[in-house]
Length: 266
Ligand SMILES: [Zn+2]
Image 1 (tube, rainbow, N blue to C red):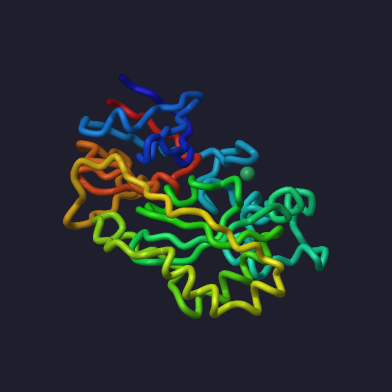
Image 2 (cartoon, rainbow, N blue to C red):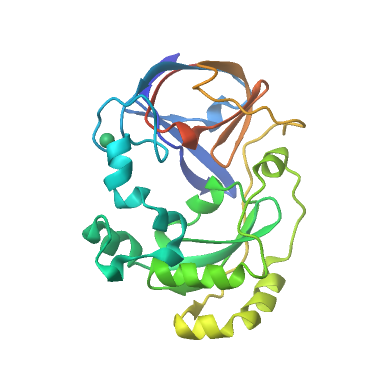
């Protein structure tokens, strides 16, 4: 079978605790879990179309946009990566209505274990996708606020005590030890009481969510593949974790190649 067209980051959901992945390719959604254990080939056709305006672009910016769009869309602004720098109140949001719809909505601060314990934030509606995208094996939402800015302020306060990065190589090799997220939550919340008060954050009482991944064999050594350097990538799909396809020939982060025109053979 062959499918081809523009790809986007994989859609995800949880089914009985296992991450399920669907790859948007052309106008199809391909269930990737079904391909684990199979030989697959991904060929880049040297064409990239901006995910926003649809124009051809030689290079992809902000994971799937042309340069002009990457400079004008609010979703490509730096404040999305650093929510504590939200500048909507200054009247300088690139797209004020988009900002209202996306950033002035319930956000959650969470703890997750992807390569060790980390803190992160996400829109409430993006749970558990955000955790699957990061390859977390467990996650616990701890606080809820009504804006992205406030979630960023809480994350900044928590970063004094806990990491906010994932070591993606460890995550992919599954070099992850279990951690007690509930105990960490209780310890951390006591340290940031001031920020909880100033952001009027609601303390959540969720249980820890465990996430399993469709992986038959984790790599012992990571070879990172890239369509710009290797336009034809082929191998046996050993599994999927975060937004990575784990092949016996190397790993590829599908998220980086949104808007690339790809032919997938299986
Ligand atoms: Zn564009």
